[in-house]
Image (cartoon, rainbow, N blue to C red; front, side, top):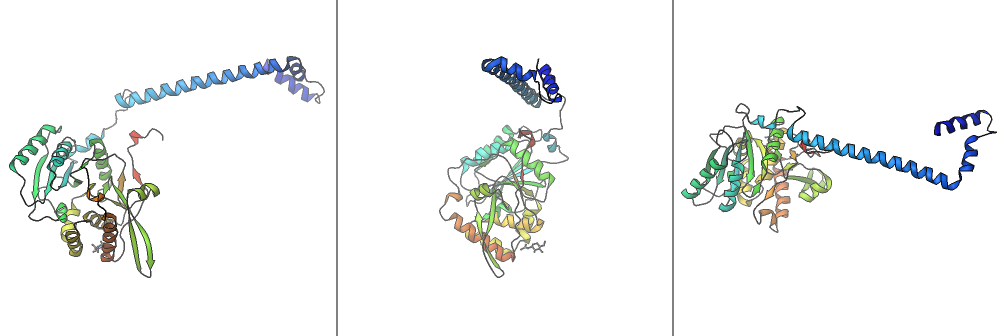
Length: 350
Ligand SMILES: *[C@@H]1O[C@H](CO)[C@@H](O)[C@H](O)[C@H]1NC(C)=O
């Protein structure tokens, strides 16, 4: 009927518009019929949309289930293959300070991650770790590990309490990758695996979960001063130039560079201020690579009730560290970026 009408209209036009059966019909049909016609068409469109929606939902379900079961034969090489003995895993380098209950929790957690080749706890308390703590943690590591080769577990005991201890070179390392972490930070194993595979694509970069930024505050002649930007400034601007060593991967060579090649004045500063070893490490890596670090998407959990960062004078101390280090370097080696690494399997939209 519609096609007939259309042809009729065309005909009418061809005839110079003198006669139109469609117009005539419309005048006969009246307003009620016209409305009914629209209603009917709308219903058809709604039906079509409904079927489209159902179709999309079905596709979603199929796609989702195929991702879970790999029933479509898209059984890609899983990232766990990254931990084959030939490629190596990573060494967890954990800094702790008088928080044995937190230490027990995090050691147990990191022992359960498949990529963990070894766990080194940096111990700087005046009392050596007790035998009972050692035995407890060794047993815990054995019990929690799911790897065929159980992770090495070791305390690196230091004579003096010094924040530089956390970056002392380790003798019997089997991996190039170091995962530096605080005793109160838990990174879920899958996020850790992902960060490790990211690091493997850029092994001289620092790859981590806690981004920070430097901001130019003023520039006079050759002298520039900077602000240290906390998480909210990174959130607001999407820019960062450091990742903190409280949860980051880096190459073992940086332990040696930090301890033996970095200017002693920076280490002295860290000793004196009991702070900023993480900023020092970020500057060191940035100076060595002339490239930004890599921020990896992933939720981390801070299990301690408080950290240094909650202290009042923290941010002014951080501004000062940054500026003092920068003046020691002579220029600012930090490079900022907006790149963030995400696991494509967890992204729903392309
Ligand atoms: C920064 O890197 C350059 C070039 O690699 C090096 O010569 C210099 O000593 C480094 N600066 C510091 C303060 O480590």
